[in-house]
Image (cartoon, rainbow, N blue to C red):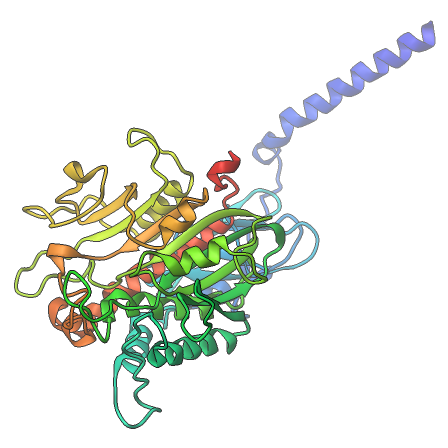
Length: 477
């Protein structure tokens, strides 16, 4: 009995001693002679293989970094993204647990300053200001323009002019077949498993109802799937409301070229879910192309045994903020709608938070910018309060494009769209040309700026949504 009491007393004394040590430890520096160890970030942290104070980040580009020393950590602000092993780090922070951490930074083209917080293993921290200079963004308006100019230009020299026009989906249209093969080769050249999905209801493979280009990228998780796409077909001659088009620059060669640029940007990234990048056909005839992919059984169709989490749609790009209407001065409207919007009074889907975060915190868009007047067309459920809002970014039920195919299957979706109807009536008409787009926004440079902004917004939405566990199929919740 005495031994047991002695042991208990010994434990109490030990506990008292430990408690006293925890209390007085922070005060040791006040009464002792020892000073806190000075932080020297460059001893364990490098950017592009140089000390951080000597590094210069080029906006819109990837930059390598190394971090060593167990317990050391770094963190960044929302517009400076961290990637480890090709995957976006949601927390924007990383700590060394065992071995050296190798990663990458990616800034947006709109970053004006870069502050990286370095934290030593003893809890001390220091903010490192890294100079930023203009770079060549991984997706950019100038490259987009060169590519769409090549695709829509017609000349005798096929090295200078692709001439991939007249892309009407229909029986035996050699123009469409030629363009589909070209787009397929673009994805294949980047290493994607790429297929032509040819679907017909009448048994004649030479006259397909839809002919899609489907590029696949394997993810880490074999149980889920996600995707991004835009339609490559254009309004046929005589089609409403403008009589059809031969170039379809705005609707939707613009979105088609954006998908080709995303394919290159995503090539070296690692996504959580299996990912498809698609160019749809027959959108103008009623979403037949995306429906063929989503509702048929084939080796490269949408797998029905995996959870379809989200889909992002690119249709009619570039006639949007920051471009201004030539001769008027008001900016074109910028539309980005998430869904499904089951209840207009509450936020229904988690991807809406990603949509808002990207525009508000990462891209730093002027979300409350309004015009003196109203726009000609917009969303379905919230137009009364959004009619004069330049950035029309929110949940909505708006359809009329391929995102509807996947929304009906329970996927959370984002639909990017520029001006249409009264704000830019050239679509579906012979005047839907690249030259007309340039004229309407007041120059090539303005068009490139508008395209670059929306391309970055959608790309960041995809990268962040991929690492957002709350984004699940609505039918699974």
